[in-house]
Amino acid sequence: MTGSYEIMVANAKIRYEFTIRRNITIIKGDSATGKTTLVEMIREYYESGENSGIRLKCEKECRVLAGRDWRMLLEAVHESIIFIDEDNAFLPSKEFAEAARSSDNYYVIVTREGLPNLPYSVEEIYGIRESGKYASLKQTYNELFHIYGREDYAGLVKPEYVIVEDSNSGYEFFSEVMGKRDIEVSSARGKSNIFLEASRCTADCVLIIADGAAFGSEMDLYDL
Amino acid sequence: MLSVFYGDMPEAIYNPVVYFKNTYTDDWITDDLSKKMIQDVDRSVVVGPRVIDSPVLGGISPRELSGGVKTLISIYKVPDKVFNASACGDNCAKWILRIGEMQDITINLRHLMDFGEEDFTLKVLNTGQIVHNMYELLLIAGMIVR
Image 1: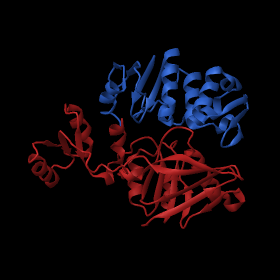
Image 2: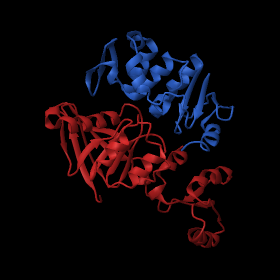
Image 3: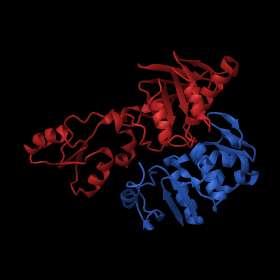
Image 4: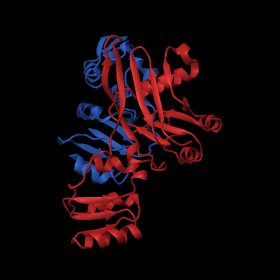
């Protein structure tokens, strides 16, 4: 499955509209923002269709994966957008990561855990926020917003020290570029070592060069 | 005192929402601290033990509270059990600290919860160290979880 998919799901009290762009989308954030309500509405619409009182518009089938029999269910689901709530113990497992990577579905996962077995983009981590009300219906309108990755840093970055995830050509390139500016560069030799490298560093302003398409699970560290 | 075990902890209750649903009693909801947590995190008002007024969902039962509040109340009311507090958002962190000031509790965190800019006291069970702010905590917990 490739491409972007718009999803609208609504009942009398609440309405969500958002676009899914990649195979893994993470939703996290504060409690009581409507994450579980969204997953519940997807589940109820899948089970009862329009008889649920829920309206859902999406080009692909949307459904929920939950419970101990997740493997069996996943084997039978294709070309769908699968929502998973945070209360599923299989989420951080290697087995789930392997099954998700080898399937042709998209996944919308509610979790605060990093899920290091499942590479996902910094740009596909979202929160949910209320963006208004439809006055006559008293319906709350919720939207997804990017938590990371949309700021424009052009002209603002003046690092004293640079840490590069890569140990080969990327490290050599930045060593060459930064060397001309007398800025020290080190290689972390992998994304999971970057935090250790950064915590040893005494510089006030550190620039980390990493692959954003797979760095999502690490972002909490640098956000804090 | 608040103690935290970071990472996988098989003996912890991974799904506090299910635990809450099957164990809570009316007095859990009408407790003063529970009412304050429901008001602050869910922006909802406890009308009675079985009715809560939510600004988004209208009149709801305790079963429809957020996962974060259900976890907070479970931590508060059943301090001898260890709950997966990664079911709580950062807006629950100050309440976890407050419960930890009132009684000895242990929680399991599988992510880096932000306990805020104020000083606090917390024991990291993985290493036995006691920390007093987010910077000290991050240097330890950041090596264990993401």
